[in-house]
Picture (cartoon, rainbow, N blue to C red):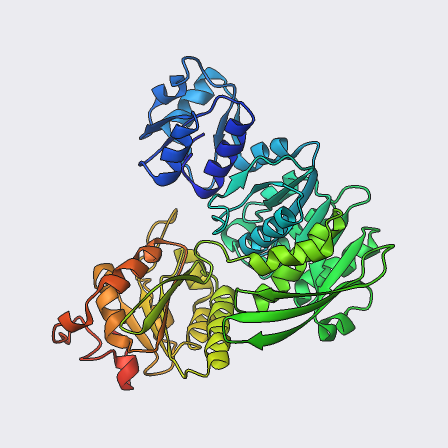
Length: 495
């Protein structure tokens, strides 16, 4: 397994090892997932070399890789081709691991990891013990994958390279659809089509489950019904009224409680079952999380889970690492971390933070520390990012995390901050200076959110460790001012 320490790859390695397979792999560095897999019996090399294929004393029967993340000239891939060893994608392996089980596949532009995690938590509490593979780490389980004793296998279905078409779901969930990964698909129409094709993968007697509050997801459901696929919709009563063609399987109403929790009132109407009312308390803020929990409840119920027990599992769900994850407090400043890296995700997280503050009645401000992910995405959605980040009181915007992409000449995060309202944005090109810049912006009672899919997650701990009393006088060439310009209401806080 090339890149075995990655979030997706390490999870599948866990399942292979639990099933008694011999596993070897490589990664660029040691990490906690790598150490855990070694302890479970995997042979893992640090660095990529052709002779890593011999770690088990013989050549592997197959080499697993991510075609998007691992370059084709990787020495292990080159050696495997020369030796005639089959190369397969991670999604191909996942499909093989799920064969013969009831497959619950969670898809959508946003919310896959959270919804998958909620589904797992609900089903575990209902005694269903599903196998699962998640792109994040469950707070309660402390792991991203598990080989269960139950008949169900729950996993994310990634659309970024159309790999979701490799699966044959019993229950296929689509949380939302918004054009993304256009570097692969080329057009919004092609992106929409992959979800229609995913719906066609639902097996006989299975169901496509769509969020009615998302128009594109609902339209996908309407088209699927016309093709004879069993479709169930979930969402608010207002959304259901817009799509009467889809059976309204689950309706939700919510009530804020104590700023930390949301009381969810849901009504489930499954095929050939009487409507069931259920009430549970959700510990994760945001209306988008309420909808995600409804998808989880419906998925577990479709496989025979006891509704009250599923709801109990949702009440106990404390989240996924990097999904509005509380990291600590310093000098009265609360710091959270989130994986949001698309404008819609940024908007949803900031709105959830607003809901939390409003329920508390604290009047706290929101300081967002955002790192754009990928040059292509930043260029494509620069206007949308600016609008989403404007929901924060101040946005400290770091330079672009290129990941697999090469830098684009002349393109920096300024293309976002220059489009934001005056006094709202601070452009911080120096990653190491970001914790100080954030602390200069924040004051007691504020809520700080570090957001992005790259290295920005490391800053939460550094912000908490930065001593406010050690602030140096700001240099005009490298700082927003004696206090953050966004806080001071300067006319132009873009650095």
